[in-house]
Image 1 (cartoon, rainbow, N blue to C red):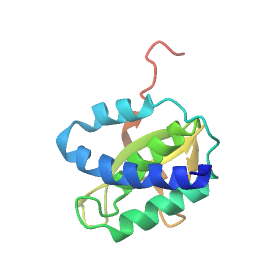
Image 2: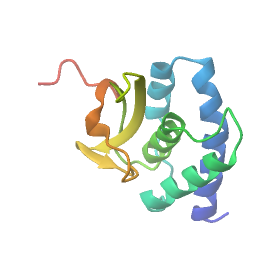
Image 3: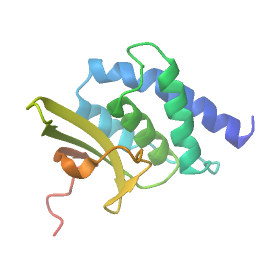
Length: 139
């Protein structure tokens, strides 16, 4: 199996496994586990390909896999960490124009948005959790 096909299979497995786990274990525990994955031995495809495969797959699947920003985020976080790339997964909240509570999940690297659709505006959300969690001993 060539490297690209291996990564597509890894994407399918992550997309089928991780979203249902969001209902079974705490998000913090799942994110810590996903963030500790050892990098794969073969080189990974471009990040944009990983994002496209993930989004296409999640948009075609029924619940509990159907596309949401949280499901997309956890799968991409896994794939990026597995590829040896740094990424931070954020969860944020805000109130919309009607006062309703809205949540969003997104990825960053070095404080810059990563693989985020242009229509989303994470800067409007108050971050309530980030993974990996900040080291409290860090300056």
